[in-house]
Image 1 (spheres, rainbow, N blue to C red):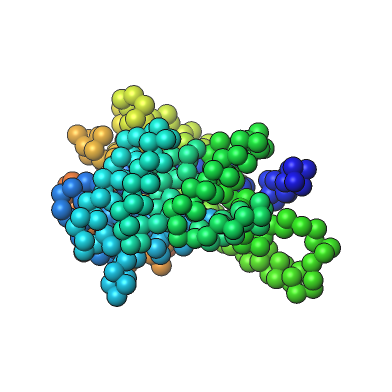
Image 2 (cartoon, helix red, strand yellow):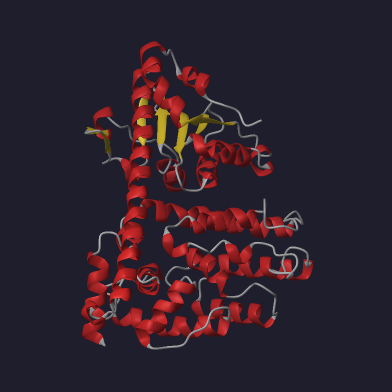
Length: 414
């Protein structure tokens, strides 16, 4: 199988629309997600400890975590559903059963603080022994973002791809089956690490492509006409999804461009997220705005601030005076977290904070901004809609006096 598998991996990596190229490689949004999800899991643990986790999935800190995970491209589609509270079935049994809830919180806390592989597997076995309804290997999608070199993601397509590739019969819904698959993946990943990665996201993406029928492991000439037709439809569907993602990315770049242009026109220094410095909009490179380097105290603060989409800085002191997070299909809450970090690291300065979002997501934005956890920190966040920023960009550049001008097109969640 070695030569055949090498060929499959090569096709997987060369396909510009595969999970490998659209999600795994050089994707700063993926890397941002690790920090956001880790912080979200910490908040789940704390809310369980403080007895304010609630008795429903909707509105809980766990929902936020699963929203962030399920937005990580196709490979995590469906990660959200196993955790939705189904009262008639009493699953997952962590919303109304306080004992199970606390066990789940303790499990997550240990996974946050432990990095030893053997101990982590032991924690899974302990959780499995508790027989808590609904806490099967769907939890592995959370564990992946805590320990990507130890735990692979787990869903129907990944299992299907694994079984097809190695001739196994791994089943869904069992931690025992998951750990068996993980052992097999560990052997495969060790053998092909040079072609893939020590991060299980790469090989999970390969299995996902195989399991969802978008990557063939057999010669196409041996397919029936019906099978060829199904394969073509799936590839076309993926092409459409990638095209839509590109369209969203272009919108993101457009909004960043408007914000950089306005900031410069108002007389401020401007900075863009560290991973976006090479971007452009309509052949106008962001670098033409003479992007500033951000000053701050040491690595943690600089890393946090450096991931915010657009910053305006005082021209004399180079201190941040406004921050903007542009959201499209990704989690509104992850952007709010980054702005919250900026506020908490520089609260002594007057920093204006804005979420910039598509008109179609206004309802979601207002919901997130009204979360008690945001209000309790004293953070004042406003939002700007794409249509308003686009419409008023030129007039603000021409007639604006200072940062308060853009506040006139901003809205408050009420």
